[in-house]
Every structure is written in C-alpha cells, then in structure tokens.
Image (tube, rainbow, N blue to C red; front, side, top):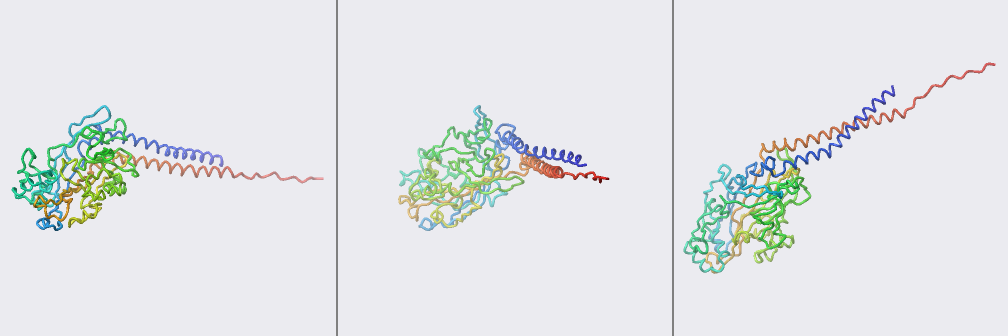
Length: 482
C-alpha cells in the first residue's frame, strides 16, 4: 500500500510542479503577448486602434470658457483696483474634424495638419454666446506695445473712435473676433486687418504641420513630435533648452508609461513643451489610469527653477525674473502682449493675484492634468486649463491709461479644454486590451496556486512516508534441550 501511495503522490507532485512551472512561464510569455499586442495596436497606421482615435478623436473635445467681467471700469481708469467676476461657462465643440493631409513617410514618421473649428454648444453653456459683458478693450490695451513709436497718434485714434480701455462686447466677439472701431482709424499700411479677438483667426484655420513618429521603426517613440512647422526646434525663446520640442501633443504617449518619470508634451497654444508629474493612480470606467499634473515648478520663477531662465523675457513686470506663474507669449503672438497663466493665477506670484479683486485659485478646479492608460500610453481623460491675460502699463501719452494705478497682466478669459473616453470606447478598449491582460494574470495565478497547492503537500507526504521505516518482527528463539 505504501508503494502505491508513493507512486500516486509522485504523479500528483509532478503534475503540480508542471502546473507551477507553466504558471511561471506564462509570466514572461504573457508579458510578451501583451507587449506584441500593444505594439501592434499603438502604431499610427491605418487599421490600428491608435490610428482610429488619432485621425479623429474618439471622444468629443469641448472648450469651456469663462469671461472676466469688469465691474468697475470707470474707477479702474482713476487708479482703483479692478473688480472682476467670471461669467460662464460658454462651451464649444472643438477638435472634431479629422486630421488633414496625413502622409506616411519611409523614415518612420507621419505628417499631418490639425484643423480648427469651434461650434457653440448651447445646451452645455450657461447663457448665449451673444451675451454682452464689460471687458477689457483688447485693441486699446495692446496698442502701446504694438505701436510704441506712435503713441501720440494712437491717443488721437482712440479719442476719434470714442474708445476706452474697457468696452461692451459679446462672448462670441471676445473669443473669435470683431471689427474694432479704434483699429479702423489706423492706416492700412500699418494694420491691414482691423479684426481683433483672443483666438482670431481660428475657425477655418489649421495648426501645423506636425511630423510625429508612427512607431513602425520603434514603438518607444510613437506619437512623439519630430518636427513642428518643418523645424526640429522652436524659435520663440532664443535658447536651446526652452526651444526644444519634447514629447507628444498629449493625445497619446509611447506605451509602458513610467510613473516615476516626467511626462512631456507640446502645446502650440503655449508655444512651448511642458511636463506633468505623477499624482495618483485611479480607475475610470474599469480602466486603470495614471494622472500626471502640470506642477508649480513648470511655471516657477528662475529663482525657484533655474531651467525656466529662458522663459523670462521681460525684466520689469517679472520683478527682475522673480515672478512666477505667467508666460510671456509676445514672441509667438506677433508682438501682441499676450501673457499666459493657469486660471485664477494658480501658482502665480502674490502681486499678480493682488492686482485684481475676484480671483480665487483652486488646485482641483484650475490645474492642468493628463490621465494616461500606462500599458498602451493612450490618453483617456484630460483637462487643459489656461488663462489668457493682456499686459499693459500706465502711459502719460494715452489719456485712458494715464491714471492707472500700476502695470497689469490683466485676466480676460480662462478656458478648460477637456475630453473623457466614451463608454463605448472604454468597453472596446477593455475587450481588446484590458480583458486579455486580466485573463492572462488570472491564469498565471491559478496555475501557480494550484500547482504549488498540489506539489508542496504531495512532496512533503512522499518524504514523510519514505522516512517511516516499518519494524520487522524477528523469529522466536528455540530453547536448547539437554
């Protein structure tokens, strides 16, 4: 009976050992299967999951705008602090058109143009885009910077057009453009286009060209920008570091995202590459995501972050490059005094926040973040939040600016461009990527657990049985008879 038990236990032990080995083999084999699957579907080529969501976004992208209404315009002209109130949101559908002139190249890159169009979404908005508010007069505020050598003439044009530093404009006009009466006074030789607006021109225009790696020659570079407008670097900052094109456009990233590394992306609207740092891991619609947020260091002063030295292009307003939280975009906005920040001056220097009344920075509401699925590198949720400000200073030569209390980097609007993966796309991703990975993980665990659960007890039993030696009964000794 002992021999039979040892035989059956040995068979069970071998089977358990084989199951455990198979479970162990599935770990690298499963990683390879998943890696091959992801590498195939992450390539930007017709027929892949990445391409379908790259050519045109799989989920609608909306821009939420809040306009800063000026409550005391007349008093601001007499040196009082501006009182602001945000109005909105006013929502537009954007980035809904497919990429244009998509061209694959033999060097492992693809070139395209991104079309721009914004469609008002009344059902998502808190009002009509024709709502009128008292806001900063964009043309008058920018005039001293744009026509610095003609200030007496500019003052005459402002008076002749009955313009002031503030005016009543609709949301649509502020965002997308209007014919300004002050600009109408300026000769065509100096200014042929009399239309102004924060995002003018936008509708019907294109951003690009972009040239990005398609991943066919190496998935580790897929979606990373190779060239923008035909150039490998920018030319706005006159510095090799600040002019670098780093990362992707944030729509996707190379697979196997490492939460211990910075995540770089480029935005043409801020005229620079920027980065996010890992904040947390969470589940969205059944998909595990990594959240990367733009930290305060990305917009810190050169005193706090020496890497930002080349973004300081203005000495006086930046308090000798000690100010934080704003980015001077004049070099990439044709000289217009546009300064960018996070909404409500989040992470900005106190003097900027104190220059106006009505702003309340809040990290949860005003930070920029990207939520990435780490295995594929696909962006599943994001919120790009920016505030557009116009810089102007007191000018004795211009009547409406002669009594200002100080220089201003004046908030005009802030926006949140955001999108989230749809339920349908989430289910599709889970079925094609997440479910096979989970299935492999379950098989690995089951095989390892069952294998060891059989192998270890059976092996121990064999050892115990083998160590037990049965006691043999000896023959009775005969007594000698004499």
